[in-house]
Structure formats: structure tokens, C-alpha cells
Image (spheres, rainbow, N blue to C red):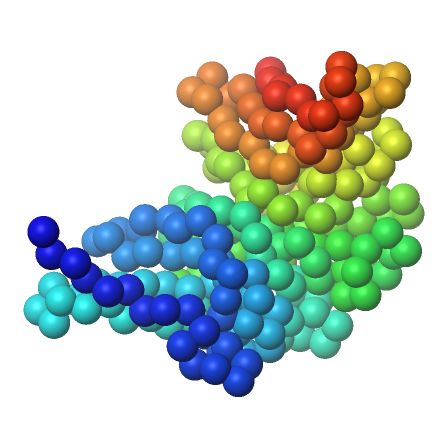
Length: 227
């Protein structure tokens, strides 16, 4: 069995320009790996990285594709946490927990999170800034990343916000248009759950996930949403 060492995070110290607290990995073409680091990077607010294996040298090369908080007030997002996916154009899409420069008493100083797209050449585009409206009806702090259906529509969850007791939302993102599919904590005493963390999708387009609290015993739920 061959053991190949992958670069350690925070190898470039003061202050970890390569990032740290890595998230889930995504396998791209030719076995290239992509993923987020929640902190570190050029601006210490997280980044998207690429790992490429060279069979000739039996070694991995590591580079940052994009460092968040490159814009004033982190308008491009900060602290990505969830999984990434590749869209039909070959771009990496995901969400950040903070950033977006939306001023709200509910969120961090630099905003409430964004949905983003990063091209493999390192160009980033923000497709939605959460909590753009008063009281955050679209939700905020989308920590779980996104999933995609066969038509290229994106789906995800926001941990907080929405129209029901700040219980979070389930949403669909088509281009830059966001539609809330469900507001959690809509039932008495949050019987339907609150604080969704992430979602997955089956072949029929149904979404499944778990909430951090609520339910019959106030300790969380597993849910299914059907189109």
C-alpha cells in the first residue's frame, strides 16, 4: 500500500495563509480535489482550495483558488463551512456563514452569509446575499452548502431567520432568484424542528435533512420536503 502525504493545513503560518478548519472535499475531473477552509487564507476569513495529484512525483500540490473577504466589509462573503458542488458550467458553488455586508442586528458585523460561485480561474460571483430584507425572511447563516437538481436549480437551508420564530428556512436558488420553500418552527413549540444544518436530495427531488432543535422532545428532527 502506498501512502501519499497531502499538505498539512496552516503550513504557511502567520497567520495561516493556506487556511485552516477544512470542510468536506469534492472530487472534480481527473481526481482533483476541492474544498473550503473556514478560516485563514489571504484575509483570514476562509478560502476555497484545490488539491492536485502528480503521479510522476507522487505528490499533491495545494493552492487557494479564492480567499474570501477580498472586498470591503466582506461583501463577497466570509467563512465558508458547507460542502461544494460543481455546476453545469464547471464552477464551484457553495455558501458562507457570514459576510455579504448586509447590516442586521441578527448577524455578524460583516453580514449574514452569501451563496457564491467560484470559477476554476479564481473569479468569484455572489449569487445571493442573505437577510437583505428586514427580519431576514429568506433566512441567514446558510452553513450546510447546496445541492442541485437535474435542471441546475440549487437548494439549501439557512440555520436562522425566516418568518417563523427565527427557526431557519429551506430555500431554492435559481440563478440569483431565491424562493423560500419552508419556514421552520412554523408549528407550535417548533414541533416541525428549527435550525436546519444541511440538506440532501434523492432522485425524485425530495429534500432530506436534520434540525438542531425542536420536535416532539425539543432535541431536533429529521425531515423530508417533497416538491
